[in-house]
Length: 167
Image 1 (cartoon, rainbow, N blue to C red):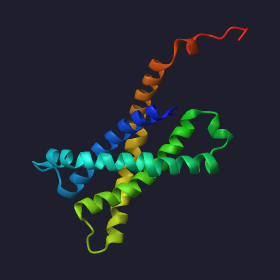
Image 2: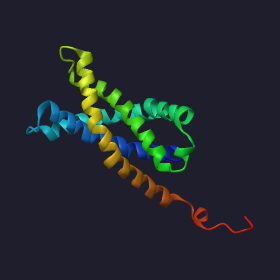
Image 3: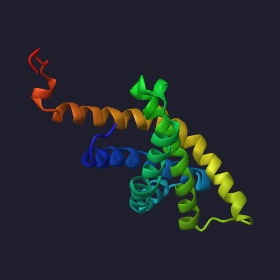
């Protein structure tokens, strides 16, 4: 888990960067298939989607999920292992981000169909089915590994040394 704002930015950059890239490709492939301009479409929409995802993550979904989790959900069982907390927060984050980013995708592509609500629900379900395993099995572990490596490298040597009895 990130311990400060700098680590939060790094974690969000890795997480959002990978999730947006894969989810953009997924949604374009669903809509248009793998055409000769697939990569161009993914890369063209990527910067705006990444900015929107980062704003949603850092400004809306992240704070909301953490508030709900730490005020209403966390319990002693979860506190025994850090991974339980990370996975629960990850699932909640995916649900929130899919909710907002599915709407973003529909607005950007102007894909409202005959019934905007049904189109949104269809988009949301398909995105959730892709985003949840992607986050839990691939992107989340990558982001946590990168964050862990940075935290290990930036931990001062005195914190790693065993404490003496006098301390």
